[in-house]
View 1 (cartoon, chains in turn purple, yellow):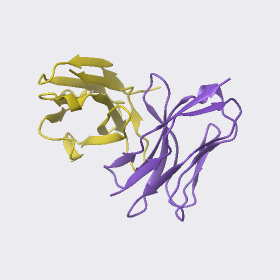
View 2: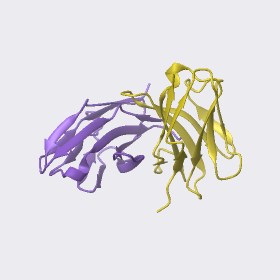
View 3: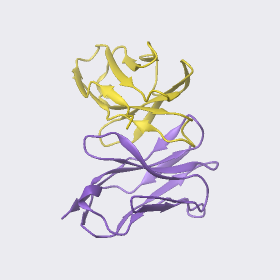
View 4: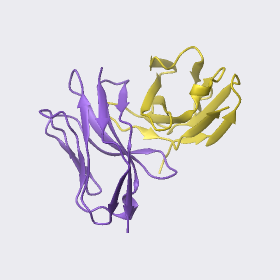
Length: 111
Length: 115
């Protein structure tokens, strides 16, 4: 069935470092892809999304490109901040009633 | 900013007891969901609810689970007789348009610990 696999954490970076969190998907059709973020003590929030191949989602300096050829949706940020410390979830939605999440990757950014 | 609220934030219960987790979705949203995350594992879909009925449920959502929207504002998840393996973080979410195009708004979660 459709699924998402993301890199295991935790990831620890220094402030201003480059971030990549890998996400690959398996889907029988053409899902929309999402990155959600969960800050400490809060619920999941949509960070960015892409609805078709070659789309790039971006928000708050984060970017991810929907790559059909490699079935990937890797999250990147050029320069992370301490405030980016959170758990990041990759997800796909193939139809209206079945969003599939990855296991989450915990990012800690140290000053 | 409108938000989804969940209560309680943490509940500890004995195995076999009934538990009700409560959620207040965003007021103009039409689709409601419950997800759960067992510690260290994936966030898993449990059930979706639209137009006062379940629209889809996963294989996790067996007869021990039920959902209700009793008064037009609350959306509840009931676990009739809890098992140890029900220990997890339960997230409520709501959406205006459904998940593959619209944004899901999540609550902060209710942590359930079954002893």
